[in-house]
Every structure is written in C-alpha cells, then in structure tokens.
Amino acid sequence: MKTLDVCGLSCPEPVVRTQAALKALPAGESLAVLADTATARDNILRTATQAGCRVRADNDGDAFRIVLTKA
Image 1 (cartoon, rainbow, N blue to C red):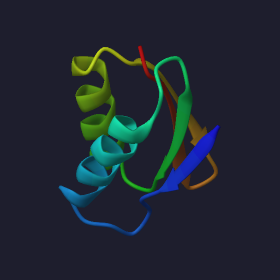
Image 2: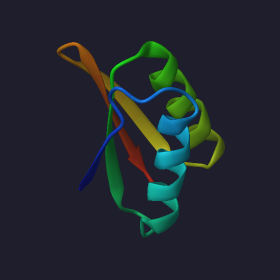
Image 3: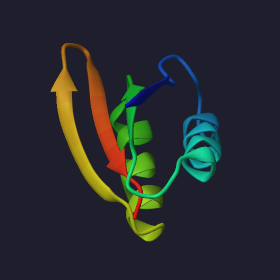
C-alpha cells in the first residue's frame, strides 16, 4: 500500500495530489492518505467516493489516515 502525506498543504492541494495518486494506482490497490485538517479529510473522502473508491478514515494522533481502495 502506498502512502501519500498531504499534511501542511492548503486546499485544494491535498485533493489535487490525491487525485493524481489515484490515477496512477491500479484497480484494486489501496492508497493511504495522511491529512492534518478535517477540511482536507472531508474533501478527500468526497472526491474518492465520487470516483467510486471504497474509503475508510481513522484518527491517527493529530492527523487523519484515510485509506482509499480503487475500484
């Protein structure tokens, strides 16, 4: 599983980087995204859901760990 760290980035950069990583990801593979704001988490979840990905978000200390599985 690949990991993408978007902590410290301002919107829309976390979503833009997540979209780029998802495009390069083969179907059935997972991507873990680390984000440090609720706004980034919500935007990434919304974007991934619209793209047909399975999503799971967990708190990871002061950040969020979002696991996206490409359909």
